[in-house]
Image (cartoon, rainbow, N blue to C red; front, side, top):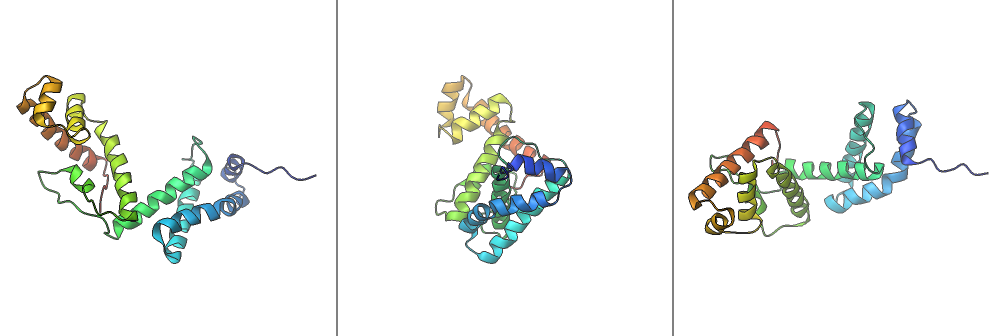
Length: 194
């Protein structure tokens, strides 16, 4: 009689409980998929190997610290870690546009490059997701003005008509939204580009 295949979640639990062989089974089980995913982004075998190893170092560290919570599939979680490490690699190698850290900080300037290659597209989509999450933390009136302006491409006159406040109030809310967004980014020590 054949042994039933042990699920990923059972192997994770077994590893957390001290069975070192469980992580080896998980790595072997998912190596091809994760390795192929990383290679498709970086197109370099040595770099793929480095990122693959870094991915599982992070996986092991997270499991040993007890910070893994089974919200989705194990392999999806590992792919997300690999995805983030690929983005980190491109950020560190300065292959994406930078913005100046000035008083007139405009977070959307990092999203405006129209000649994007694959790596920049990957990074851009991650930055957009990060920015959308940060925008949700703004006060409602600032968040609305910012969304109308950048996502709906509305003029301040149109925003003023939509919100029922003066153009100056809309401009002020936009200014405070960008200042607050910058403060949130600095407070949380978030790197959108580097």
